[in-house]
Length: 187
Ligand SMILES: CC(C)(COP(=O)(O)OP(=O)(O)OC[C@H]1O[C@@H](n2cnc3c(N)ncnc32)[C@H](O)[C@@H]1OP(=O)(O)O)[C@@H](O)C(=O)NCCC(=O)NCCS
Image (cartoon, rainbow, N blue to C red):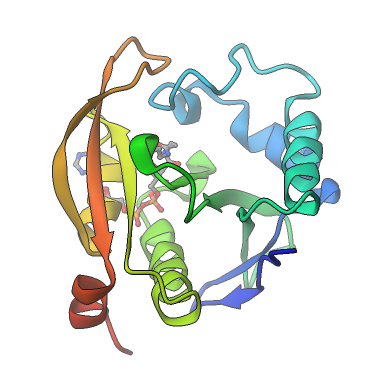
């Protein structure tokens, strides 16, 4: 079984997703501002048991042997509540991207996702030893694009992908080990 490791960054703890995160995820994810630029595979309106069913399904896939890393983001100086999540499926068909992430709206624009993604890139390239993977975002999703640009992603092109806000195209990016190891911030 592939275990999601606990990772600590300057301001965050990335810990494995657990059923006990359901209430926090339901609270923070059930927000049109978070959902609108996500692909339509995410249900909307978000069902009352959306987070719980999502967590059960993902934990089941991991238990069944799928290589899927599922972290929740927790502030180091907070109360332990999940304020976002990152999924990474390195060997999945990268057509729609190998990674997804979201952060609760009150915490946007403080560099938190960039900090978390840098740690996930280190895990991908230094621990798993991957050569590259792909990531995507809706064309209008400036914040997600910036996170990618700040964490070594190189633009590949546009792909067809329906999003909740009606956009049908996504930007596709490639993250390579070579570029990340050359440009990664060292502190
Ligand atoms: C995408 C998301 C995770 C970013 O998290 P975050 O912690 O706010 O990201 P960061 O603070 O590390 O970086 C955001 C960058 O976008 C920039 N940004 C945000 N909104 C912007 C806007 N409207 N115009 C220009 N830049 C913008 C910020 O200034 C920052 O860039 P900078 O550091 O160069 O100034 C968060 O916005 C989110 O959860 N959105 C909803 C879900 C989502 O879109 N997930 C990704 C799907 S592909």
